[in-house]
Image 1 (tube, one colour):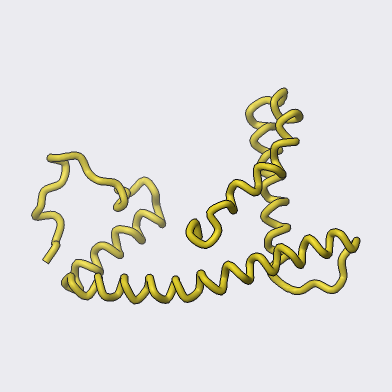
Image 2: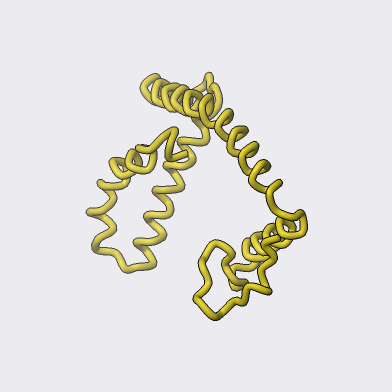
Length: 138
């Protein structure tokens, strides 16, 4: 997504900056909740812009939603073929390892996603904490 819309994250800050004056005097919990509410509203606006909506409150709001929808559509036209390309590359790389290794790595990722107290398969282990015999690299 960063390749197709590198400024996407930056765009939201113009929306959230005015909230800073209100939240700077809040306690941590209230500040966190308020920022969550504002980010949630921003995400909701992005979601509703994904389709065509004929009934909107005002013309300027409608124009904004349609513009955001077109922007997303443009980005998806590039992202979908790139996703297929990346899947093909992953399959080609995976084919260079024994099937048992891929199954084990997939299990490690699934276990960690289900329970983040499990070892994180995306972090490098410290030298000496994991022996080579524990990792089947074929």
